[in-house]
Amino acid sequence: MSLSTKARATVAMAVAMGIWGLSFLVVKDAVATIPIYWLLFVRFAIASVLLGGFLAFRRGLRLPRRDLLFLAGLSILSPIGYFLFETHGIALTQASHVALLIATIPIIVFLIAAARRQETFSWLKIVGIVGAFIGILITVGTSLNEPGASWIGDLLVLGAVLCAAVRTVLLKDALERISPMQLTFYQFLFSLVVFGPLAAATDTAWVSQLSPLLIGEVLFLGILCSAVAFLCLHFALKHLSASQVAVAANGVPIITLFAEAALLGVGISPLKAIGTAIVILSVTLAQIAGRRQERPDAWVEEGPPSA
Image (cartoon, rainbow, N blue to C red; front, side, top):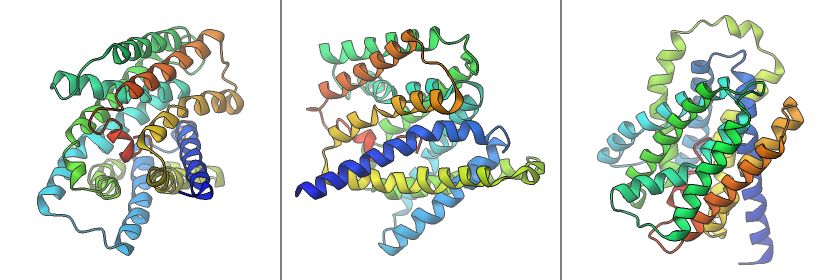
């Protein structure tokens, strides 16, 4: 691989992580005006059109009926369950809390897989798991009294984490037959069956309050966050190792933390910074410990669920 190709892959990875890092702030601002169900419906309708067009161009839409039924059932966990929990959580708590909790999905995936005897413990993994939870307690526990923070919102985000982790474990065998792009497109498409009626049952008075900024935020989520960032991720995965991309993804909470401070004026206390660093280092340690296991970074092929 030429240096220029590796450099482009690194830039693509950085672009994807930057978009996802900002996505939590964009959602938080958008839901202050746009009802959550409408935001989810419009966002995934846009993403479905873009990804569907890309797959149609590459003749990759066709899947066996059994796989379509499997994806339809799995969409209940994500994007439906995941984004309902996550978006309601974002509306109630700090964006940096959300990004940090979402970063622990690989840890929860491992714990579920270990309970099913699909993974084995090692000292490095144990240290990573314990460290991640200590970091969360420090970060979340010491900032609950800050403006915008809420333990209810944090609990809702944990519901999203659980949905994403269970889905990832169930997908282990399916990813041998279904490409990550097919997976994302069909699950976005199937989610519209739920988000559409929920949106239709919601008041549309918010339409009169639309501004160029709000329209831009919806387009950011539908085009950049759910489509462009996903394509960037897969370009990076094509030219870099899954472990490199997975570890880089742990930088998303840092982007969110500093963006929240710069754009929303939320302070970064020393304990909050220390807790965030502990979580990121602990998750990275657990991932490094799992490199030699089968498909250790399979979760990253789907893209962070916040995509």
